[in-house]
Amino acid sequence: MSNQKIRVVHYLNQFYGGIGGEDKADYRPEERAGVVGPGQALQAALGNAGEIVATVICGDSYFNENLDEALSTVIGMIKKHQPDVVIAGPAFNAGRYGVACGAVAKAITEELAIPVVTGMYPENPGVDMYRKFAYIVQTSNSAADMRKAVPAIIKVVVALGQGEEVSPETHGYMARGIRQNYFHTERGSKRAVDMLIAKINGQPFTTEYAMPHFDRVAPNQPIACAAKAKIALVTSGGIVPKGNPDHIESSSASKYGKYDIAGVTDLTSDTYATAHGGYDPTYANQDADRVLPVDVLREMEQAGEIGELHRYFYTTVGNGTSVNNSVAFAKKFAQELINDGVQAVILTST
Image 1: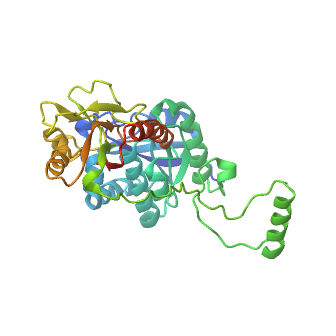
Image 2: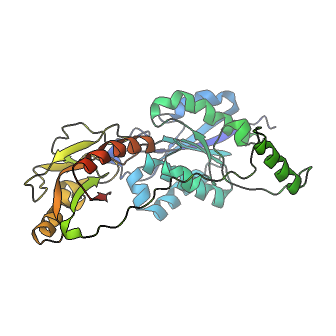
Image 3: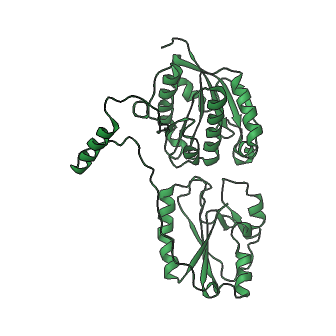
C-alpha cells in the first residue's frame, strides 16, 4: 500500500459543472484546476488519501452528438494530469450523463488503463452499456442521494488508488460481468451437485453465474382489420397541451397526462409542445405531430385506412423515468383503453 496521495481527475456535465441546464447542454469540453461542484464533497471524503487535481466539464448534448471529437478532447485533458483514478459523475438517473460517464470510462480504461469510478441508478442506460469498463456504485435516482453516494464512491477510489484487490461484495459496486479464470479447491462438477442438493433441500446457495432477468411480454394477436379498428396514441416523448397543465416533470416523471383530441386534426405550435428534458425540443415544439402523429392518423381515418382515432392520448416523459413508474402508468391507462374499446396502440418515443 502506497503512502503517496492518489491523483484524481473528475469528469462532470454542464449542470454539475455550474455552467447551466439544458440550455447549456451543447457546452464544449473545458478543464479547470482543482475541484468543481460535487468535487468539493468528494475531496472532503478523500481527505489526505488523495487530491482531485483537475476537473473536466462537457455538455451532455455536445458529448453525445459529437462523440469521437468530444472523447478525444476529454481524454486528452484527463491524460495530461496523469491521474491514478478518474471519477465520472455521479450521474444518478440522468441518461445522457450516464452514457457520457460510461463512454469516458471505456476510453480511459482501454487507452490509458486507468480505473474509472462512477455512481448511477441501476436503470440508467449507462449501467448496462458500460458496466464492464467502470466501477459503478449504485445510487438512488436523483442527486438527493449525493450524501450517501460520495462515501461509497470514495471507498472504491481509495482502494483502487492504493492498488488493493476489489470486489462487488467487499467494496459495494455493481457486478461488472467480468469472468476470470482461477483454480478452485473443488471440481466444478462437485460444486454444481452441491448447489443442486442445497436447492432441493431449500438451503441457501450462491450461483457462480447469475442469469439476467428479462421481463417477457406475450404479444397479442394481430388486428383482424385495421380499417375497423379504434387506435390510440401513447407517447413517452412528453407531448402536452401548451403550458404543461399537469406539470409533468421533464425528467424522472412521477405522472402521466391524458388529453382530449376530439376534433383536433393538427398539433400546432400554438397549442402543443413537449415537456421532455432529454432531447432538443426545438423541432417537437415547432410541430408536435413529429412526435405524436395526430395529423397523419386523421388522414388515415378520413381515407378509411383505420376505423377511428381514440379521442384521448396518453403522454409522459421517458427521460430517466423509472421502470416501476412506467409499469404503474401503463397498468392504469391500459385498462382505460380496453374499457374504451381501443383495439391497438401506437406508442411513440423520441
